[in-house]
Length: 416
Image 1: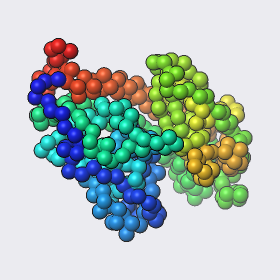
Image 2: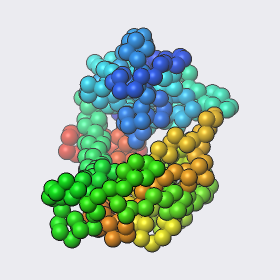
Image 3: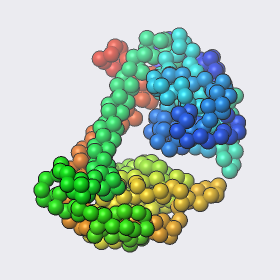
Image 4: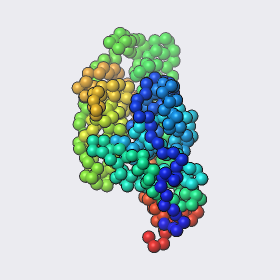
Protein backbone atom coordinates (compact mmCIF):
# COMPACT_ATOMS: atom_id res chain seq x y z
CA UNK A 1 0.00 0.00 0.00
CA UNK A 2 1.53 3.29 -1.08
CA UNK A 3 2.25 6.17 1.28
CA UNK A 4 -0.42 8.25 -0.46
CA UNK A 5 -3.16 6.03 1.03
CA UNK A 6 -5.00 7.46 4.07
CA UNK A 7 -6.87 5.70 6.87
CA UNK A 8 -10.26 7.42 7.28
CA UNK A 9 -13.49 6.55 9.07
CA UNK A 10 -16.69 5.98 7.16
CA UNK A 11 -18.11 8.90 9.12
CA UNK A 12 -15.45 11.15 7.53
CA UNK A 13 -16.14 9.76 4.07
CA UNK A 14 -19.95 9.92 4.11
CA UNK A 15 -22.39 12.82 4.44
CA UNK A 16 -24.88 10.52 6.12
CA UNK A 17 -24.96 6.98 7.51
CA UNK A 18 -28.44 6.02 8.59
CA UNK A 19 -30.81 3.08 8.50
CA UNK A 20 -34.37 2.54 7.34
CA UNK A 21 -37.68 2.96 9.13
CA UNK A 22 -37.97 1.82 12.75
CA UNK A 23 -41.44 0.32 12.51
CA UNK A 24 -43.76 -0.91 9.81
CA UNK A 25 -45.55 0.67 6.85
CA UNK A 26 -48.96 0.05 5.32
CA UNK A 27 -48.98 -2.15 2.25
CA UNK A 28 -50.55 -0.92 -0.98
CA UNK A 29 -50.13 -3.25 -3.94
CA UNK A 30 -48.89 -1.68 -7.20
CA UNK A 31 -48.37 1.73 -5.60
CA UNK A 32 -44.91 2.01 -7.13
CA UNK A 33 -43.39 2.97 -3.75
CA UNK A 34 -41.03 0.28 -2.47
CA UNK A 35 -40.13 -0.76 1.09
CA UNK A 36 -37.10 -3.05 0.86
CA UNK A 37 -35.44 -5.28 3.44
CA UNK A 38 -32.52 -7.71 3.69
CA UNK A 39 -34.28 -10.24 1.45
CA UNK A 40 -34.37 -7.71 -1.40
CA UNK A 41 -30.59 -7.14 -1.38
CA UNK A 42 -29.40 -10.14 -3.41
CA UNK A 43 -26.28 -10.82 -5.50
CA UNK A 44 -24.98 -7.25 -4.96
CA UNK A 45 -28.10 -5.61 -6.37
CA UNK A 46 -31.60 -4.54 -5.37
CA UNK A 47 -34.22 -7.08 -6.43
CA UNK A 48 -37.77 -5.76 -6.74
CA UNK A 49 -39.53 -8.95 -7.84
CA UNK A 50 -41.05 -9.72 -4.42
CA UNK A 51 -40.59 -6.30 -2.83
CA UNK A 52 -43.29 -4.78 -0.65
CA UNK A 53 -45.11 -1.73 -1.98
CA UNK A 54 -46.47 0.78 0.50
CA UNK A 55 -48.71 3.83 0.60
CA UNK A 56 -47.35 7.10 -0.76
CA UNK A 57 -47.86 8.76 2.62
CA UNK A 58 -45.76 6.13 4.43
CA UNK A 59 -43.13 6.33 1.71
CA UNK A 60 -42.81 10.11 1.99
CA UNK A 61 -42.48 9.93 5.78
CA UNK A 62 -39.79 7.23 5.56
CA UNK A 63 -38.02 8.76 2.54
CA UNK A 64 -37.20 11.87 4.58
CA UNK A 65 -34.92 9.64 6.66
CA UNK A 66 -33.21 7.74 3.84
CA UNK A 67 -33.50 10.06 0.79
CA UNK A 68 -32.07 7.35 -1.48
CA UNK A 69 -30.12 8.59 -4.51
CA UNK A 70 -28.10 6.86 -7.25
CA UNK A 71 -24.63 5.99 -5.96
CA UNK A 72 -25.68 5.51 -2.33
CA UNK A 73 -24.24 2.31 -0.87
CA UNK A 74 -26.58 -0.13 0.87
CA UNK A 75 -25.34 -2.45 3.61
CA UNK A 76 -27.55 -4.93 5.49
CA UNK A 77 -26.87 -4.46 9.19
CA UNK A 78 -29.44 -6.69 10.92
CA UNK A 79 -29.85 -10.46 10.78
CA UNK A 80 -27.87 -11.27 7.65
CA UNK A 81 -24.94 -8.87 7.97
CA UNK A 82 -23.03 -7.56 4.96
CA UNK A 83 -25.19 -7.90 1.87
CA UNK A 84 -24.44 -4.90 -0.32
CA UNK A 85 -25.59 -2.98 -3.36
CA UNK A 86 -25.20 0.42 -4.99
CA UNK A 87 -28.40 2.34 -5.65
CA UNK A 88 -28.67 2.36 -9.46
CA UNK A 89 -29.37 5.32 -11.74
CA UNK A 90 -32.97 4.23 -12.21
CA UNK A 91 -36.38 5.89 -11.61
CA UNK A 92 -37.18 3.21 -9.00
CA UNK A 93 -34.34 4.47 -6.82
CA UNK A 94 -36.24 7.69 -6.10
CA UNK A 95 -39.31 5.64 -5.09
CA UNK A 96 -37.47 3.26 -2.76
CA UNK A 97 -36.99 3.27 0.99
CA UNK A 98 -35.89 0.65 3.50
CA UNK A 99 -36.68 -1.18 6.67
CA UNK A 100 -34.39 -0.79 9.67
CA UNK A 101 -32.34 -3.82 8.59
CA UNK A 102 -30.60 -1.88 5.79
CA UNK A 103 -28.06 0.92 6.33
CA UNK A 104 -27.64 3.70 3.77
CA UNK A 105 -24.22 5.29 3.28
CA UNK A 106 -24.08 8.55 1.32
CA UNK A 107 -20.48 9.08 0.14
CA UNK A 108 -18.94 12.54 -0.06
CA UNK A 109 -18.27 12.48 -3.79
CA UNK A 110 -15.08 14.56 -3.75
CA UNK A 111 -13.55 12.35 -1.02
CA UNK A 112 -14.49 8.86 -2.12
CA UNK A 113 -15.78 7.31 -5.31
CA UNK A 114 -19.08 5.52 -4.51
CA UNK A 115 -17.96 2.35 -6.27
CA UNK A 116 -14.62 2.36 -4.45
CA UNK A 117 -16.53 2.66 -1.16
CA UNK A 118 -18.72 -0.26 -2.20
CA UNK A 119 -15.73 -2.45 -3.08
CA UNK A 120 -13.90 -1.44 0.11
CA UNK A 121 -16.88 -2.56 2.20
CA UNK A 122 -16.88 -5.87 0.35
CA UNK A 123 -13.19 -6.25 1.16
CA UNK A 124 -13.82 -5.44 4.82
CA UNK A 125 -17.04 -7.47 5.11
CA UNK A 126 -15.67 -10.06 7.52
CA UNK A 127 -14.17 -7.42 9.83
CA UNK A 128 -17.43 -5.48 9.82
CA UNK A 129 -19.45 -8.60 10.59
CA UNK A 130 -17.30 -9.23 13.67
CA UNK A 131 -18.57 -5.92 15.12
CA UNK A 132 -22.22 -7.08 14.99
CA UNK A 133 -23.81 -7.57 18.40
CA UNK A 134 -26.57 -9.87 19.59
CA UNK A 135 -27.14 -13.58 20.17
CA UNK A 136 -30.48 -14.45 18.57
CA UNK A 137 -30.20 -11.77 15.87
CA UNK A 138 -27.01 -9.95 14.96
CA UNK A 139 -27.07 -6.16 14.64
CA UNK A 140 -24.32 -3.83 13.44
CA UNK A 141 -24.81 -0.50 15.16
CA UNK A 142 -24.70 2.69 13.10
CA UNK A 143 -22.10 4.21 15.43
CA UNK A 144 -19.80 1.26 14.71
CA UNK A 145 -20.26 1.82 11.00
CA UNK A 146 -19.47 5.52 11.35
CA UNK A 147 -16.32 4.77 13.38
CA UNK A 148 -15.09 2.01 11.08
CA UNK A 149 -11.85 2.88 9.23
CA UNK A 150 -10.79 1.97 5.71
CA UNK A 151 -7.70 2.79 3.64
CA UNK A 152 -8.33 5.25 0.84
CA UNK A 153 -5.97 6.23 -2.01
CA UNK A 154 -6.15 9.49 -3.99
CA UNK A 155 -9.28 9.95 -6.09
CA UNK A 156 -7.68 9.12 -9.51
CA UNK A 157 -6.50 5.77 -8.14
CA UNK A 158 -9.89 5.11 -6.53
CA UNK A 159 -11.53 5.62 -9.91
CA UNK A 160 -9.08 3.34 -11.72
CA UNK A 161 -9.62 0.55 -9.19
CA UNK A 162 -13.39 1.02 -9.39
CA UNK A 163 -13.19 0.97 -13.20
CA UNK A 164 -11.40 -2.40 -13.27
CA UNK A 165 -13.75 -4.07 -10.80
CA UNK A 166 -16.77 -2.33 -12.33
CA UNK A 167 -15.90 -3.69 -15.78
CA UNK A 168 -15.97 -7.23 -14.36
CA UNK A 169 -19.26 -6.51 -12.59
CA UNK A 170 -20.72 -5.17 -15.86
CA UNK A 171 -19.82 -8.45 -17.57
CA UNK A 172 -21.41 -10.44 -14.77
CA UNK A 173 -24.55 -8.31 -15.01
CA UNK A 174 -24.68 -8.71 -18.82
CA UNK A 175 -24.53 -12.50 -18.46
CA UNK A 176 -27.22 -12.41 -15.79
CA UNK A 177 -29.55 -10.38 -18.00
CA UNK A 178 -28.93 -12.69 -20.96
CA UNK A 179 -29.82 -15.68 -18.81
CA UNK A 180 -32.97 -13.90 -17.67
CA UNK A 181 -33.91 -13.22 -21.30
CA UNK A 182 -33.45 -16.86 -22.30
CA UNK A 183 -35.62 -17.99 -19.40
CA UNK A 184 -38.22 -15.33 -20.18
CA UNK A 185 -38.55 -16.66 -23.74
CA UNK A 186 -39.27 -20.17 -22.46
CA UNK A 187 -41.60 -18.86 -19.77
CA UNK A 188 -43.58 -16.82 -22.31
CA UNK A 189 -44.18 -19.95 -24.39
CA UNK A 190 -45.18 -21.93 -21.29
CA UNK A 191 -47.70 -19.23 -20.34
CA UNK A 192 -49.08 -19.06 -23.87
CA UNK A 193 -49.56 -22.81 -24.14
CA UNK A 194 -50.41 -23.91 -20.60
CA UNK A 195 -51.85 -20.87 -18.81
CA UNK A 196 -53.55 -18.68 -21.43
CA UNK A 197 -54.23 -21.61 -23.82
CA UNK A 198 -53.64 -19.41 -26.87
CA UNK A 199 -53.37 -22.29 -29.40
CA UNK A 200 -56.60 -23.87 -28.11
CA UNK A 201 -58.46 -20.56 -28.33
CA UNK A 202 -57.15 -19.99 -31.83
CA UNK A 203 -58.34 -23.41 -33.00
CA UNK A 204 -61.71 -23.00 -31.25
CA UNK A 205 -62.20 -19.70 -33.10
CA UNK A 206 -60.98 -21.06 -36.42
CA UNK A 207 -57.80 -18.96 -36.40
CA UNK A 208 -54.26 -19.95 -37.30
CA UNK A 209 -52.27 -20.94 -34.22
CA UNK A 210 -49.01 -19.68 -35.69
CA UNK A 211 -47.44 -23.06 -34.86
CA UNK A 212 -46.11 -25.78 -37.13
CA UNK A 213 -48.73 -28.33 -38.19
CA UNK A 214 -47.40 -31.19 -36.06
CA UNK A 215 -47.33 -28.99 -32.94
CA UNK A 216 -50.74 -27.45 -33.59
CA UNK A 217 -52.27 -30.93 -33.89
CA UNK A 218 -51.29 -31.64 -30.29
CA UNK A 219 -53.75 -29.01 -29.02
CA UNK A 220 -57.52 -29.61 -28.81
CA UNK A 221 -60.00 -27.20 -30.38
CA UNK A 222 -62.41 -26.89 -27.45
CA UNK A 223 -62.66 -26.42 -23.68
CA UNK A 224 -64.35 -28.26 -20.82
CA UNK A 225 -65.33 -27.26 -17.30
CA UNK A 226 -63.13 -28.04 -14.28
CA UNK A 227 -62.71 -26.98 -10.65
CA UNK A 228 -60.45 -24.17 -11.90
CA UNK A 229 -62.77 -23.07 -14.68
CA UNK A 230 -62.45 -23.85 -18.38
CA UNK A 231 -59.49 -26.01 -19.37
CA UNK A 232 -58.57 -27.55 -22.77
CA UNK A 233 -60.60 -30.66 -23.55
CA UNK A 234 -58.81 -33.88 -22.66
CA UNK A 235 -56.30 -32.27 -20.32
CA UNK A 236 -56.19 -33.70 -16.80
CA UNK A 237 -56.54 -31.92 -13.47
CA UNK A 238 -54.35 -33.61 -10.85
CA UNK A 239 -52.73 -32.70 -7.54
CA UNK A 240 -49.18 -31.35 -7.44
CA UNK A 241 -48.21 -34.38 -5.37
CA UNK A 242 -49.21 -36.62 -8.29
CA UNK A 243 -46.52 -35.18 -10.53
CA UNK A 244 -43.63 -34.31 -8.22
CA UNK A 245 -41.97 -35.18 -4.94
CA UNK A 246 -40.34 -32.54 -2.74
CA UNK A 247 -37.29 -34.28 -1.26
CA UNK A 248 -35.42 -32.82 1.70
CA UNK A 249 -32.02 -31.22 1.19
CA UNK A 250 -29.11 -32.09 3.46
CA UNK A 251 -27.24 -30.00 6.03
CA UNK A 252 -23.90 -28.65 4.82
CA UNK A 253 -22.38 -25.92 6.99
CA UNK A 254 -20.13 -23.38 5.31
CA UNK A 255 -17.03 -24.58 7.19
CA UNK A 256 -17.67 -28.14 5.96
CA UNK A 257 -17.67 -27.17 2.27
CA UNK A 258 -14.64 -28.00 0.16
CA UNK A 259 -13.69 -26.02 -2.95
CA UNK A 260 -15.20 -27.57 -6.05
CA UNK A 261 -17.50 -27.14 -9.07
CA UNK A 262 -20.78 -28.17 -7.41
CA UNK A 263 -23.18 -25.36 -6.55
CA UNK A 264 -24.59 -25.28 -3.01
CA UNK A 265 -28.18 -24.03 -2.92
CA UNK A 266 -30.18 -22.54 -0.08
CA UNK A 267 -33.76 -21.34 0.02
CA UNK A 268 -32.93 -18.18 -1.96
CA UNK A 269 -30.59 -19.68 -4.57
CA UNK A 270 -26.86 -20.27 -4.94
CA UNK A 271 -24.92 -19.72 -1.69
CA UNK A 272 -21.55 -21.38 -2.32
CA UNK A 273 -19.57 -24.24 -3.82
CA UNK A 274 -18.56 -27.78 -2.85
CA UNK A 275 -16.71 -30.74 -4.34
CA UNK A 276 -19.50 -33.30 -3.93
CA UNK A 277 -22.99 -33.41 -5.38
CA UNK A 278 -26.16 -34.50 -3.62
CA UNK A 279 -28.35 -34.37 -6.75
CA UNK A 280 -27.59 -34.83 -10.46
CA UNK A 281 -28.59 -31.85 -12.60
CA UNK A 282 -30.49 -30.35 -14.17
CA UNK A 283 -32.91 -29.92 -11.33
CA UNK A 284 -35.16 -27.64 -9.29
CA UNK A 285 -34.71 -26.31 -5.77
CA UNK A 286 -37.68 -25.05 -3.73
CA UNK A 287 -37.18 -22.92 -0.62
CA UNK A 288 -38.38 -24.70 2.54
CA UNK A 289 -37.20 -22.50 5.43
CA UNK A 290 -36.35 -18.80 5.47
CA UNK A 291 -37.57 -18.05 1.93
CA UNK A 292 -40.34 -20.62 1.50
CA UNK A 293 -41.65 -21.31 -1.98
CA UNK A 294 -38.80 -19.68 -3.94
CA UNK A 295 -38.26 -21.83 -7.05
CA UNK A 296 -34.73 -21.99 -8.48
CA UNK A 297 -33.50 -23.73 -11.64
CA UNK A 298 -30.15 -25.53 -11.48
CA UNK A 299 -28.56 -26.66 -14.75
CA UNK A 300 -25.71 -28.78 -13.33
CA UNK A 301 -25.12 -31.19 -10.43
CA UNK A 302 -25.90 -29.50 -7.12
CA UNK A 303 -26.08 -29.77 -3.35
CA UNK A 304 -29.36 -28.46 -1.85
CA UNK A 305 -28.99 -27.77 1.88
CA UNK A 306 -31.52 -28.50 4.60
CA UNK A 307 -33.44 -25.24 4.16
CA UNK A 308 -34.65 -26.52 0.78
CA UNK A 309 -36.49 -29.22 -1.08
CA UNK A 310 -35.31 -30.59 -4.41
CA UNK A 311 -37.81 -31.80 -6.97
CA UNK A 312 -38.12 -35.40 -8.15
CA UNK A 313 -40.59 -35.99 -11.04
CA UNK A 314 -43.09 -38.78 -10.33
CA UNK A 315 -42.90 -40.02 -13.93
CA UNK A 316 -40.29 -39.75 -16.66
CA UNK A 317 -42.58 -37.80 -18.99
CA UNK A 318 -43.06 -35.05 -16.37
CA UNK A 319 -40.16 -33.14 -17.94
CA UNK A 320 -38.06 -31.09 -15.52
CA UNK A 321 -38.36 -27.95 -17.69
CA UNK A 322 -42.15 -28.22 -17.70
CA UNK A 323 -42.21 -28.78 -13.93
CA UNK A 324 -39.99 -25.74 -13.31
CA UNK A 325 -42.42 -23.35 -14.96
CA UNK A 326 -45.44 -25.16 -13.50
CA UNK A 327 -43.99 -24.64 -10.01
CA UNK A 328 -43.29 -20.99 -10.81
CA UNK A 329 -47.02 -20.59 -11.52
CA UNK A 330 -47.97 -22.18 -8.18
CA UNK A 331 -48.32 -19.79 -5.24
CA UNK A 332 -46.04 -21.85 -3.02
CA UNK A 333 -44.80 -18.88 -0.98
CA UNK A 334 -48.35 -18.32 0.29
CA UNK A 335 -48.24 -21.76 1.95
CA UNK A 336 -45.36 -20.75 4.24
CA UNK A 337 -46.18 -21.00 7.93
CA UNK A 338 -46.79 -17.70 9.71
CA UNK A 339 -43.96 -17.98 12.23
CA UNK A 340 -40.65 -16.38 13.15
CA UNK A 341 -38.96 -18.58 10.55
CA UNK A 342 -41.46 -19.15 7.71
CA UNK A 343 -41.55 -22.65 6.29
CA UNK A 344 -43.18 -24.46 3.36
CA UNK A 345 -45.28 -27.49 4.32
CA UNK A 346 -44.81 -29.92 1.45
CA UNK A 347 -48.00 -31.84 2.30
CA UNK A 348 -50.00 -28.66 1.79
CA UNK A 349 -48.12 -28.01 -1.44
CA UNK A 350 -48.95 -31.52 -2.68
CA UNK A 351 -52.66 -30.66 -2.39
CA UNK A 352 -52.42 -27.79 -4.90
CA UNK A 353 -54.15 -28.45 -8.21
CA UNK A 354 -52.00 -28.87 -11.31
CA UNK A 355 -53.20 -28.92 -14.90
CA UNK A 356 -51.53 -31.72 -16.85
CA UNK A 357 -51.38 -31.63 -20.67
CA UNK A 358 -50.86 -34.85 -22.64
CA UNK A 359 -47.29 -36.25 -22.60
CA UNK A 360 -46.58 -35.45 -26.32
CA UNK A 361 -47.30 -31.76 -25.64
CA UNK A 362 -45.04 -31.76 -22.58
CA UNK A 363 -42.28 -33.29 -24.71
CA UNK A 364 -42.83 -30.67 -27.42
CA UNK A 365 -42.38 -27.89 -24.87
CA UNK A 366 -39.24 -29.56 -23.50
CA UNK A 367 -37.71 -29.72 -27.00
CA UNK A 368 -38.14 -25.96 -27.25
CA UNK A 369 -36.97 -25.10 -23.72
CA UNK A 370 -33.97 -27.43 -23.47
CA UNK A 371 -31.68 -25.58 -25.94
CA UNK A 372 -32.45 -22.25 -24.24
CA UNK A 373 -31.43 -23.65 -20.89
CA UNK A 374 -28.28 -25.18 -22.39
CA UNK A 375 -27.34 -21.71 -23.61
CA UNK A 376 -27.94 -20.46 -20.08
CA UNK A 377 -25.49 -23.06 -18.85
CA UNK A 378 -22.81 -21.68 -21.16
CA UNK A 379 -23.48 -18.21 -19.81
CA UNK A 380 -23.29 -19.49 -16.24
CA UNK A 381 -19.91 -21.13 -16.89
CA UNK A 382 -18.53 -17.87 -18.29
CA UNK A 383 -20.03 -15.92 -15.42
CA UNK A 384 -18.34 -18.11 -12.82
CA UNK A 385 -14.98 -17.56 -14.52
CA UNK A 386 -15.45 -13.78 -14.37
CA UNK A 387 -16.65 -13.97 -10.77
CA UNK A 388 -13.55 -15.94 -9.77
CA UNK A 389 -11.31 -13.32 -11.42
CA UNK A 390 -13.16 -10.55 -9.61
CA UNK A 391 -12.93 -12.44 -6.33
CA UNK A 392 -9.17 -12.80 -6.75
CA UNK A 393 -8.55 -9.20 -7.83
CA UNK A 394 -10.74 -7.31 -5.38
CA UNK A 395 -8.67 -7.86 -2.19
CA UNK A 396 -5.39 -7.26 -4.03
CA UNK A 397 -6.61 -3.96 -5.50
CA UNK A 398 -8.35 -2.66 -2.38
CA UNK A 399 -5.41 -3.57 -0.15
CA UNK A 400 -2.87 -2.01 -2.53
CA UNK A 401 -1.07 -5.33 -3.03
CA UNK A 402 -1.62 -4.90 -6.76
CA UNK A 403 -1.01 -1.33 -7.87
CA UNK A 404 -2.89 0.16 -10.80
CA UNK A 405 -0.39 1.97 -12.98
CA UNK A 406 -2.98 2.92 -15.58
CA UNK A 407 -6.19 1.53 -17.01
CA UNK A 408 -4.36 -1.14 -18.95
CA UNK A 409 -1.67 -2.42 -16.55
CA UNK A 410 -1.55 -3.90 -13.06
CA UNK A 411 1.68 -4.06 -11.05
CA UNK A 412 2.50 -6.00 -7.89
CA UNK A 413 3.36 -3.56 -5.09
CA UNK A 414 6.99 -3.98 -4.11
CA UNK A 415 7.63 -5.49 -0.72
CA UNK A 416 4.37 -7.43 -0.56
